[in-house]
Image (cartoon, rainbow, N blue to C red; front, side, top):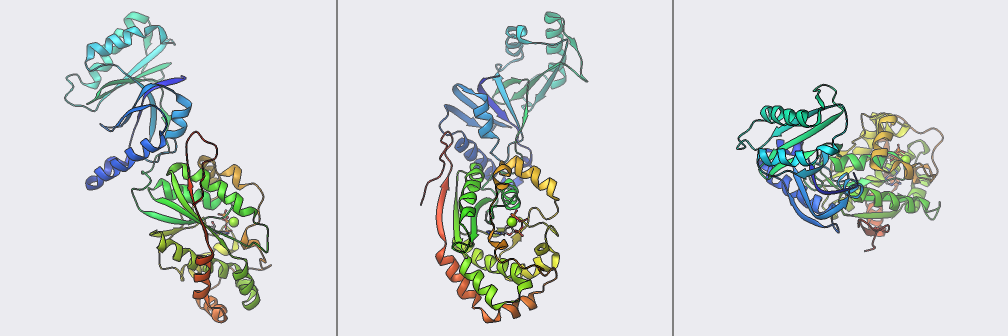
Length: 398
Ligand code: ATP
Ligand code: MG
């Protein structure tokens, strides 16, 4: 299948949203339109599923690649419109009998428009008999060589053969805004992907130790953001020089607490940025007990400085599961390129696994943490990253 004139996508969870349904649907339609920008779209509607009609045939790979980034879409199918009545459906199939390959087939009809006079069982039987008589192919409902799906909707009858998995989830923008603490590693981009999958719009903050280490992590994070932003069109990225603050922590605090103290400072600064951008939560890529800084005790000591909720979408996942998500997000290949994270800068040999908020507060007594948070926020370099389909360079400065 190279070109398509219409596409239908199924929508599962949105159907459950009761009173908010209209809002969810509008957000989803907006996101579908944005993802297809630049293609000859004639109409996007949502009678029971998302229906996209093009004014001229469009390459399937292009359409599928774009719709695969739209959270909220489940199955994605290239479809053909087969008229409005059963007779028109039969005539439509009759013209295409030559394309049907295989020894066995099945018809699978779904009637979402209950005003249509013929039930799905009856459509299966009548159309099945029609195809069987004219082609000699046998009906096999358990393991057919070919399945012809028929969807009866209020906008007519649609026929398709193949369906492909969409990304699922909820439309980005339907459940608030988050600020993701993004390192160059595997985990935080996967966490961003999952946060967007649950309908949040994601913005990003990255801390780097330049001038004390190379700023290679910054270029890497920019590339990661350009991949992640495909799900929502545009986002903000704050890049924060963290080296001086780290130097002060190193100079005046116990070595074992360093990483937890770095993380507490990051959270304080991130929270200020989040409030300015009206984000309602922070997101990190931490997963319980993955590394020494991610014990329950350390996470508790880190969280104590935050007032916004800190979401950790990866908390219950093991590394293989996280890698699978990163691969689906398209970030894995970038994440495994070598870089030096600011947390490995002056990393202690024996990091504390059981720090407490009290011990951290005592360690921070000689540092003006609020002043640091203000300075870090002030020194953040902010860019707006935009995605434009069809152009390699999808980023613009702000
Ligand atoms: P990742 O793969 O995301 O780097 P990780 O398993 O390496 O995570 P840590 O290095 O302990 O774990 O970092 C835990 C989380 O803290 C990261 O997932 C990220 O959310 C945040 N974080 C760490 N370093 C940075 C950074 N330089 N800038 C912004 N956030 C960071
Ligand atoms: Mg890391």
